[in-house]
Image 1 (cartoon, one colour):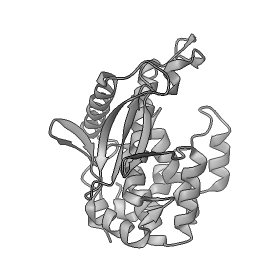
Image 2: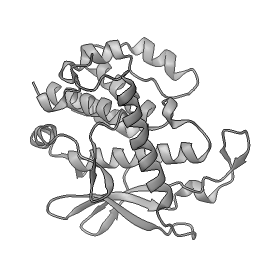
Image 3: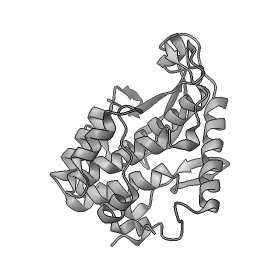
Length: 252
């Protein structure tokens, strides 16, 4: 049992908890929008989010991302244009930018591969995805809201699966955090209400749902049914399934 993953003192439906999640999201969105960027395509201002202890691996975002340069992005009000706050998550190893796949397909394969290696590691990942949906592991450090997953969980994952696709599991988690952060920034910019579940929350809870299925708890039929309905491609895990699949969370 990993006590550090429990969220029993934070009831998901509690008004005070919801207000805290809202304030953290707004903080991160405001910060993301404030970051500087280069306006020449394929050039970026790089902003560091995380660095490994040995300094070899860095994760962050580059601005501006690809949606800054197109005029086909759908806004909430029905118009089309660019997204002026799009960011490009990056992984840098030994000073070299690494081309790393950020697609759902790659992330789903990651969970599938972990399921073949270690059941406990898969449950740890599921707990981390669920916690990240609600920014539980985000703490203020030097005036910046920073992703700080429980060290107990990181230590276990690093011991069981030290490297995946050329980077550490810890780096992968921070890369996923960069993607989630950018989702909220993008959707908020486009006029959508990210506090309704759009963006980070739906993505992270979809990851948790996928993991629950690999654990033999979630329903593949439910997942496919939700994937086919708007919003296309997301299927947030029901709280009843999360309780069963991830008892370490101690959801109430």
